[in-house]
Length: 287
Ligand code: ARG
Image (cartoon, rainbow, N blue to C red):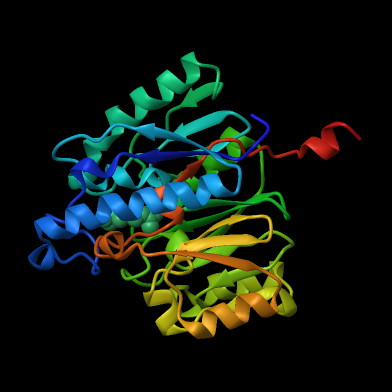
């Protein structure tokens, strides 16, 4: 794969029918929202494809609405897939479907190896293990969903350093809701989502000039949950304040109306899973 390669899920069975995070409001969900969700998912796919990326699709499964968030399915790097184990029974039914999807990708040579997490641990995939392509390490969130005990398995599986970041609140329950490394070494993040120790860890690795802080409003709009490809950032509709901050930092924004998915507590980053990341860049390999 010589271009960015993402997994997305057919949104045909998406709804908000249970509540496993504080953003989810089954009582406001309705049939008209399902149609809007399909349109929103298509718009996100088109925004990815417009950058030259390729998108593969996992089929929808009735009764598994959150299958539309494949970021939670696995951690993927260097062709290795570390399968997730979900904390909540509501999402555990997704595991065999994602496993089968990765087995099909493996049969086609699109990933190389599928690895299981040790028993007794929870880990919700790339939602809580974000590859930093500039620093060449994983930032790993834990607490609300992923177990702290799963972090050594990530280090062992991929052989890369991991920086642990404890999440302080249920509102920002996955690291990808509050933390987004950007090409060039900047980081967009929402400080109140982290424990004091995690904030210190971020400051220790990211120079002040590279830290872009999201406001309450920007974080609640799920704008930190963004897909970054070079100087382009694809995200949910952004408040003007964030547009200005990111333009000043040299990034171009593509905004997609993802309102139906925000009603489930997710947006652009977690509706996708990037499969082509390498720990050593092609430029380094050929040097
Ligand atoms: N309703 C889903 C859940 O609570 C949303 C998941 C969003 N995923 C993410 N990585 N932020 O699990």
